[in-house]
Image: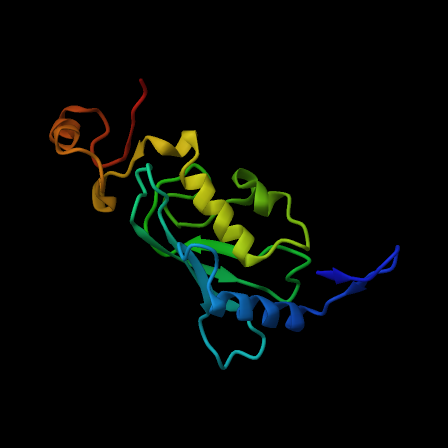
Length: 170
């Protein structure tokens, strides 16, 4: 974050920036479907954070609660935090084995700007969950099928790739 007027700017130090983000996270964000806070209140470097996203309506993620870990290294906010889903999820920008959000597949991390915040990351991940390329990806195996109609669940055994996730097209 930078402050200033008419061509001048002041760069807000990392710790002040993180304190500001902590305050916003504690107050709650928007409709309450995205939240975040520190993992350890005793961590004076404010590195380890936990985020929560409640899946967006009209998506395979609807009403599911996803936990994420965000790690702000010493170069944050100049460089993005590392972001990893603690909850299992099937999204095109998330490594299925590790849960890591891959910067090359998620524009917010790949095109990071100092002005971006953890709140922005979480809000954009929620938006990404509802994107058309993630909309019909069915989470198989231990992920469950959530709001998928029972008839479709019944036929899942007949679809190739059971347990691996199945991509349905019209």
